[in-house]
Image 1: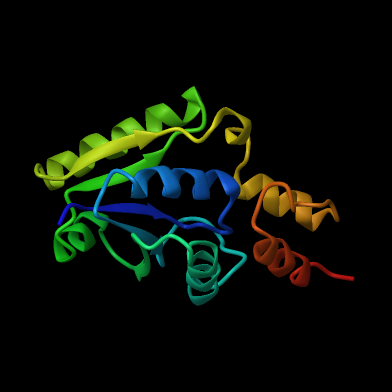
Image 2: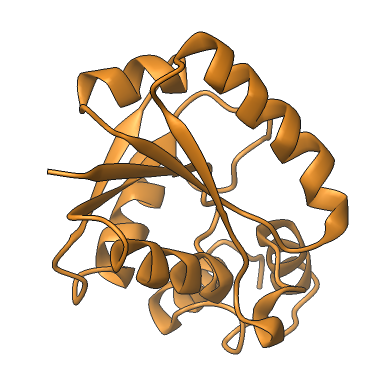
Length: 159
């Protein structure tokens, strides 16, 4: 079985993430969306909430499994016998960091490839950070995230 991991904080999942998940799942026998417990970002949603939001968003994708993980990504990849990591690139500005990360992961685990996928052009400007900011300021986010995620964001806002 050719298994890949798509890691991230997914706080929250966006339509751009879902586009990458859908296309990556067509390239592998199984795609594990790996939700990071440890991340440098202050998360709006707990790890369990992020996993549940992702499971709901991907329930119609039979080759996709959502799992939480903590610690070093390459160790999690080894545990699952993954052959590749999928990383999304929205803009050239993402590339430098992602390239460094890919090289470090290759050094730590030479048999683990990194595959970069870009979301569809009309989704490249969407980021979790911007979606959270729009929601926080009372804006509508339904065009950027699945409906259940928009509802979860609305429930976190005062008023």
